[in-house]
Amino acid sequence: MRTYIIYLIENQFANHFYGREYMFYNLFQDFEEAEGDDKRILRRQIMCVTKRIPANLFNSYMNEKIKSKQGCFEENGVYYIRKNRNGAFSEASLGYRNHSLILHASGSYESETIFFEWLRQWNPYFLALDTGEGRCAWLRPIKQPKFILS
Image (cartoon, rainbow, N blue to C red):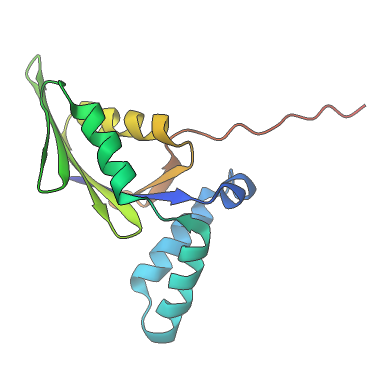
């Protein structure tokens, strides 16, 4: 099973740290391993660089997306997508937790890709941490301005 923790990053931090996503990953990983005062300090840093995902907006957006989509449903506040295409089974669940979203997926990548696509349409500043593989990436890469020096 693949697990992703998805954070909504503050715009200014997303733009500043674009291309250095590993720094976000290190921050979140250090927080998971920290104890005591270190954990408290890292929690403050995380609260500073992330935006709270409004639960009511998230739920209304997801309910609109799953409405009349085959294989998509909501149960106890968790959204599910189950697909079986040409014998390739795919299942993913997306849930809201405090300051982040958590996505669990198994089988082919189709279901998790649908969730990622929906989230990137909603906001360009979502960062997904793949806890199993130890990596992270933007759901929608941020476009950097190009300057021409003359």
